[in-house]
Length: 392
Ligand code: SOE
Image (cartoon, rainbow, N blue to C red; front, side):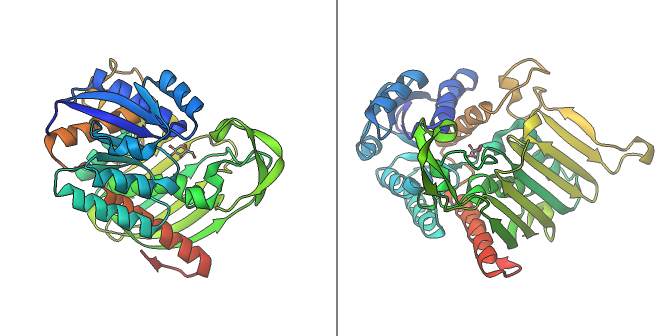
């Protein structure tokens, strides 16, 4: 790495921009990144709102010109937090300008876009430019610990996985439109927004890949009030209405290949209509020697079942994942003191920057993001033509 300082440009400053800002602010204070990081510029479309975010989140400057910001010779890292439709153009411009790129999930809005981004990342890699996709839940300590258990063989051969991502913020049919309900901006609905996390987690924890899928998509509410005021998930409704052009709920089954889950089968569900479930990402992995259960709504816990223990002692144990031995936790609070959603972004920044400093490729790579995009596409194809076991 040429310089002793990484200067960051962040594109987008909505919910994800706020979360990533938290990561950039906090990671250097709790982890040794091996380099100074500087929150140089935040980029948005509206000058006033971008300036407000600059002040609130602690960026040095604000800009409405994304191209100037990401090609600026003084910038080393580009962090993309804008809607999916912008990822391809911003990421390729940044990579071609030699900037390291962290891009929010899902990588793109289509397989073709993800392929173009992956090709640009591969070309840039030759000159030491790194790129990573923001699947932040890999960095929940309980998830990283679950992966360690699987890798140590504590689950034996994995036969079944169940991954559900359940939210309910669209359950009210009069809730206003957001960009996440517009296919031209978001690519897909629950499937890509939250189902992508479930796919990535299963593949990450088990080391397997989804090979074939069979899926169903549903849009329950096809028209909603447009947004009158505010942005994102907390806006207010106007009297005009707009079309919902994405799926509200996605359900699919899958066959897995490779890793600890070679030959396993899985069920996946992603919905924003699971009344009462606010941000319930649950993962259950059943193996020949043990099992794990995780629920993001209790993200400091992992339930582990050891099927090799004497029969009379068997049962799921509730492990509070806050020991210094647990992944990432030594940097935070004394044992038993919990961490939250925002910490996953600090961990993401830490892993990304440390990989840049070490001259290594961080994970999830754009190749991994492209694979998830192919799974999303296969689910959509399967749902559209009703075909079982669509090949990814
Ligand atoms: C909205 O559904 C959302 O913010 C997703 O976009 C995020 O990826 C997920 O972490 C929480 O829910």
